[in-house]
Image (tube, rainbow, N blue to C red; front, side, top):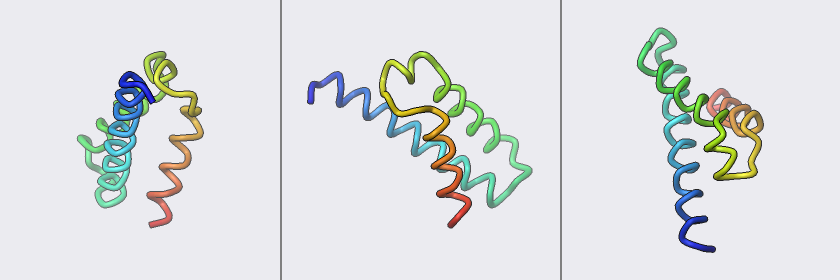
Length: 73
């Protein structure tokens, strides 16, 4: 794996961690505007051309899997 691939993976992984945390915060406090804002920012990234350039993982697939994961816990 090249340095660029490791960097791309690290960027996507950090976004996943941030989104997961935002979803957990929303679950604990559904009226949290900051948590909702953080989640929306992550979703915008997942739907972006930059995300598509970094990975082949479907944005909708990833978002749905993370939502299911947080909902089930």
